[in-house]
Amino acid sequence: MESPYYCPFCKGNRQRFNIIEQVPRPVKKDPATGEILQEYQDDALDPFHMPYRGVQRKIQCALCGIIEDEEVYVRMAQSHPHPSM
Image (tube, rainbow, N blue to C red; front, top):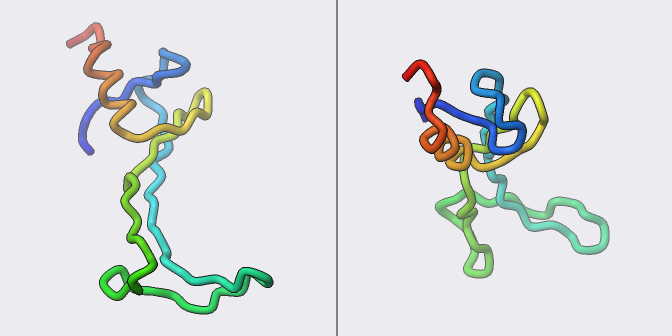
């Protein structure tokens, strides 16, 4: 997302962030050993396997280290505009 960010925790960082792209990997594991028994494609999940519905991107403040959804950083920037704007 091409929007300004503002850290909701340290409330000082507007520039340094780590963007974390989340890529879900649907699998079926052996409950005893933890071995992966089967990997699924998103379009071919079995009836008992719910597809991932979480956010695709998380943001980490590179100053304080807090990790939140991207939307949290964007909303903070919108509610606390940069003084030069």
